Length: 440
Ligand code: GDP
Image (cartoon, rainbow, N blue to C red; front, top):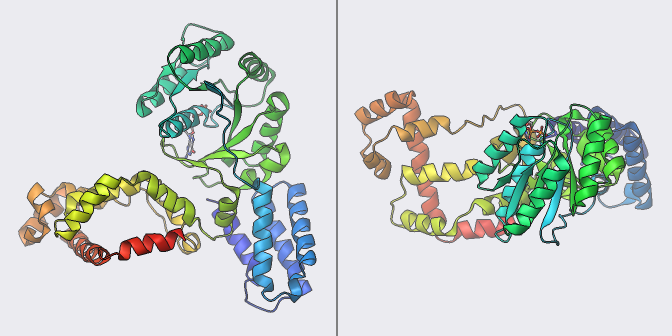
């Protein structure tokens, strides 16, 4: 996420981070570099200029040059301004009505249908929410089918009416269906076009007027940069929407949309999409995003994601197994599956402070575990529970079965042994201490 921008900002702030003396000249030079980095990331020219001006004002106001740690203070000012630019505090959804109706708007391909599913899943996992998805794209039957596929995946009911050509009527019927069937959330997926056009705007505006949703969300593909901002403006003029959803932040996006959109439409970014899977959704926290952009990582989100996947019952069972020396490859597989559920690997690594920069040239494959999984799947149940019995001939068989070499099997066994030993050591409370330290 935002690798290029992070790298450039890091370079720009290098001098200030203690690698040289700080003078008025190099503060000015730094701000010029910061502005250039923002422009390269496709941030609007005016916004970039205002940004550096504000940083300069603040730096003067706080007497940065004569402060004890001028570099750190400057970096903090940049971070605070970046946070402010992206929205200050995180803003949630207004879900006070029953049912609460959420209307999705945006261009075709922006990720509306996918996000509708992600949001339904996100709210469903909150236990008190029972969402209904409503398919209002009357032009593309495939879009209705797509929403049904998504609904099946996450076990959320989808309301549709394939022959009906009136999206307003479908939306209203969907809400009535929700009321009659105890759904307290209605998410309405609408039709988009490839570009802003009058017919689409009239249609979404009619739906909006007729159903008066609690939340109108504008979904936008972050890869479209400046265009994203222009489209947001067009939709906001018509809908006066409540929040923005930035999708595809897992891609090679330059970051311009994330940074500019708030100040152009003055509406908060509420969620981000970070992948095609239903779990790839995050609440947008401006300050955490600023940390990530400035290469400071995002440990809070990382721990939160781990906690979401964390199953206490499973953890207790695992602890017992470790204590009794019964931790086997089946348990190892389960651990890998849990990690995979946390999101794509590159994204996870990016949340570790400093790691994003260190690993930027390393291609972290999402299938990084594939070889390991293949090796484990080629083991017999007995070998998985008692790895000690794996001798040379078994290694040969496992290698053959998994399409790997004996060397790779050996390597995995070695890593597994080291990990088992480490887990045993952490049993004495070290693990808990480690988690505690991360939270503080
Ligand atoms: P819609 O036309 O606005 O409903 O867009 P879709 O939901 O059909 O999404 C268009 C394409 O973008 C699909 O191939 C999705 O899988 C993909 N997509 C949606 N959100 C994300 C995301 O956050 N990350 C990535 N990488 N792909 C996404």
